[in-house]
Length: 119
Image (tube, rainbow, N blue to C red; front, side):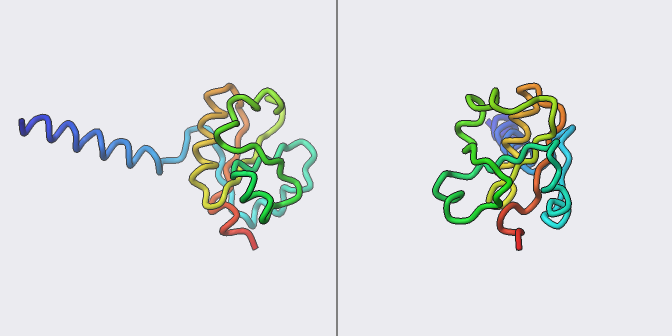
């Protein structure tokens, strides 16, 4: 019985830690760094928040593709261009970055802190 508790605890800790570890092969930038990259026409900017969040406040260069629709709408994005992903706090964009890597996108950037850090 004690062994099962250790296994469950270990699995729980792994899942928690795994959520916060940056995805391998994903570049992370600050919102300050993002400002220097917005003019780059060779990049695709994706906001993975809900349509309501996006409508309330967004950066004009970003296209809204909610996280739950990302897999089905990924073919609309070019795998030849860098994809820069943002959300409200950086959690959903980190998840989206991981998802894009699994879908074969090689050049993915996550905006740390998301719209909450945008000023």
